[in-house]
Image (cartoon, rainbow, N blue to C red):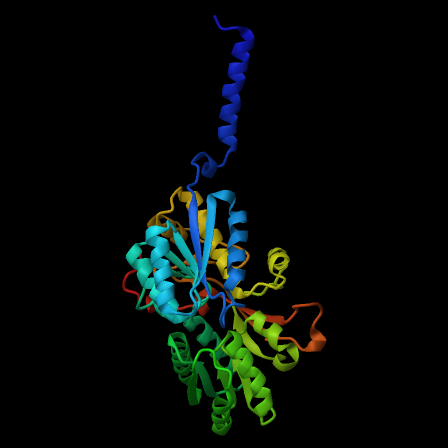
Length: 404
């Protein structure tokens, strides 16, 4: 016969266990698997401020916010903007070091090489900084997902923005590698379709410090608008030399396909004021972005770029999919991301297309004048929102023949 106290304790234990089971969310009852993530980025070259250690810190914030805590291990490496270094690192991570997914990966040539490895290893790589749209177009393989932006969305939005200002003749100065050539070609095609004309075009190597020859060609072209497709230290060097050559004083407008907040911080509002551009994220957009940016700033002493915010979003949504499916298998995570629209501090009205392109709202913005600045890093005025369906290529337009 059971002792009444023992029986009561037993019943209380069973009841408590049952209630604990009811209270615990499914992800805890299922015991989400441990996850190992790799942040493959530029730690030491032209895109170090865009991504770099900031991308690693953004991934760590996402791991905390996912609720998986110490179940997430994050490793990182510098691909040095070299495709062979990037692909070798990715292959080692996937095949022998147990990395479940790779994130970030600046520079188009490196991203294309890593995308191939991801397809061969059948593991996900979510690209946050690379702009090359071949990842989800002719080179799509179902394992490379493009998160923050692409050439089509940036070029299309930029041309529309500048044509509205009456700037219909362009001289394009672009990087002499895959994404630079593709960005210039897409801009030319979009501009011509809108009734404009490219009157000159020239390519410069990555890491250029002397833009004098290129600027003289732009000056001689008499184009209304001189467009740079570069970023990072290349863009900073170019725009500083624009002032020395006096192109603006001669009546030419200067612009970029996109603007990154670390470039604005490095160059200053005085030189960039009034510049119209397209961006995927701004830290001071609303209270949600400001709250997250305060956490990032506490670690980095810089405001996050759109690419670092993109890494945060990609890692967070990946981990949410792992929790929901109880799996780190690429196909399971990918299917969940495809089938469930989502929102976060970066991605608004977001959904993943079957070709691997994440579609979300984009922003048009203007760089403030020094007199308009209210506080440190207060650089942008948001002009409007471009819905994802308008900014990005539709699935029907896609060249991807392997939708998943």
